[in-house]
Image (cartoon, rainbow, N blue to C red; front, side, top):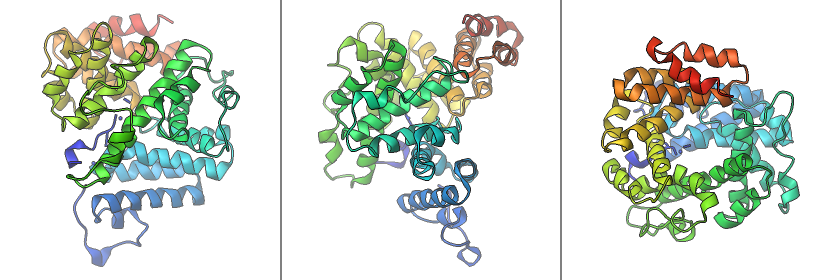
Length: 382
């Protein structure tokens, strides 16, 4: 895979600094010595470093170490989600139970720490049955039913099921169906589709450019139908599927964003809007949340496509570190016609982030005065 293809996804995207003076090099496990290595070796080195920190000092310190690495190395920032997944997996090993391990995670790098914990937990079971997953993401006095924290747990469950069932997407989705409530199931579906695409991207990158991509043959993705599996699934799975699908589309198209808009235009009905929002999320990740580049790439669409792209992008700006302020900054950068919808989306996103309505109101008031009402209308609706 070309370097420009390493991207994150919804949530899914993935990035080098040059060499260093070996005379001044730190020991091999240090981030400084990692940065001089070729890409694959460098990422493995970073992974070993944060793992060493975690087992010596705990998950919180390992997450801080990864944050420092990504500040110095944009390639590490692009790979932050897989790296933080690894922190989650090792956290389960260190602490022994999923609830305890998740209590040490934070909402950084698309909340991948939580996802990794659930992956490791499910992989530790000799066999997974529906009764194993039902109690994993409970509602409590501190975790409300539709909170971002609970979403991360359910989304991580989808990741874990997909790995456990060796990327059998249909079987993984069927286990998500055992969850009570449509929101719970939808959150789990998203983890299934994301894990399938992320692993496909990683396998594709690991193969020589002219070689056979084994995961293409075994994954639920098809270079002859860039909308597959969404194009053949039943209705209940389509929103979650199309909300991730552009990450696969862009990989097959070598990040030709104009062509990706054309692919989304093939989607029938309401899910076409979902596809454009998915593309906005991927543009956000591809540009590392650069507002100027997001403006340029989303405008490759036409009419309503542009608005939906911006909505997807602002959601990613916020969800990357569970912070509304980057989203507000994107809204400020947009032209007038797009501002109101952007700020309304910020209001929508602060609802799961903050149970405290005062915090939602405060976030909205950090935007431009004339659009505070648009933000508040969504933020205070629940």
